[in-house]
Amino acid sequence: MKTSGSIGPTLSGKRIVLGVTGSIAAYKAVALLRTLLSEGANVHVVMTQSAMKFVAPLTFEVLSDHPVSTDLFEAHQEMKHLSLSEQADAIVIAPATANCLAKSALGLGDDLLSTMLLTARCPLILAPAMDGGMWTHPTVREHVATLRARGTIVLDTEEGPLASGRIGQGRLAEESAILEAIQTALAPQRDWQGHRILVSAGPTHEPIDPVRFISNRSSGKMGYAIAEAAQARGAQVVLVSGPTALPTPSGVEIIPVATAEEMMKALSTRLAWSTVVIMAAAVADFRPTQRASIKIKKRERIGHTLNLERTSDILAALSAQRTTQLMVGFAAETNDMIAHAKDKLTAKGLDLIVANDVTIEGGGFGSDQNAATLIDRQGSITELPLMPKRTLADAILSHAQGLLHSNKRSIQGANPLAGGR
Ligand code: PMT
Image 1 (tube, rainbow, N blue to C red):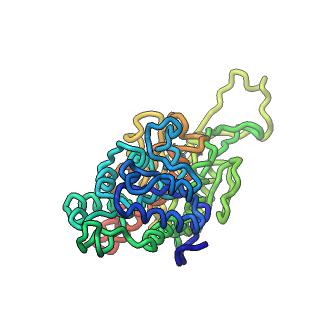
Image 2 (image 1 turned 90 degrees about the horizontal axis):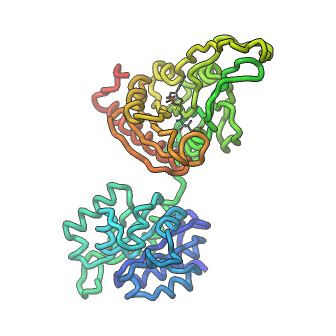
Image 3 (image 1 turned 30 degrees about the vertical axis):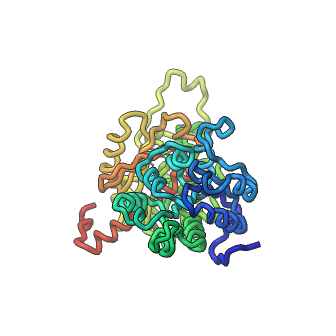
């Protein structure tokens, strides 16, 4: 049964955490829960101690068919602040009190709900409810502004009769407005529509003879995640891939290559077509000066030296040839990561470099997760925690999107980029 006239994108299968805090409007969260369930969402409810003074957890428990989480320290709710937020597609707090807004803006974590917000990486939607005098108080306005600047969706309150008996601003937003905010936050982003992104991934193989080669530990997972994320966000994607065991992401055109030279050729051919280049490949820096045409016999080579020469710096060469493309490189480092990455950003003429410490446990080569620091040519440094490579891919694309916008603004203005590259 549908309890709302929702016409937005379906919430079917979406995992939503519904946070309920201590406001008289807490009873409206029951109706919201029913609507979310009727839209197909899988909803876990988290209540604060004050919320439980207004509505009993049992009401939410019976309707949602999941235990209600209330206490950070309860034995069976061990690490709930991590597991709930990591699995959620969205967190919605309705009603959100002034106290909840303050804790979220300041990063305080003194109960399950507020601690969970500190670990959340999914969209966060807050629907405040409080008395009018509180809603217009400068401190609350400041907290709302801080949260919005950080990307949290804070809905406006409604005007009408308040619990105090006064008429004013501060009522919980209409259920349809909360539902629409959730649907918009979960709708697939198409912010790269109209862009053509050239991505490189994987290692290169530099042959010694027909059976041996020089290479590195790259699995291609990082580059493939970027290709997949860019395609999902509406871009046309060409993926130039060194040898990997990964399936081609759907909707992505793949150009398989083996050596650095082949990768250089494939990328150069597509450079003019592209609007953005993202170089996640781990290109071998050296190759044997000679490639034997037949298998080298062990006994022939005992005591012999393998002579190496540098491969071309593909990224630097592409940067030098670019016209308007945004150039994104990676820096795989084991020490002094920021300093080395900054040097590469400048030396290779990049707009953005994704620095990763490849020695950290659970990240770097071969793993499904990675931790990175994004350094852009405007001097901003954004440190990101260990996260799935697919999530990191989205974060890189969002940062690159911001740079494209600032490019456009400066080109429309004084054109400081002209001749500056
Ligand atoms: O593939 P995975 O197993 O998922 O691992 C991901 C990764 C660790 C390979 C990835 O996150 C990463 O760091 N990729 C870049 C690896 C690398 O070669 O870094 P670098 O610091 O040596 O090179 C700096 C940049 O120049 C890179 O964008 C690289 O693609 C590029 N380069 C390097 C050498 C070369 N001859 N030509 C280049 O274009």
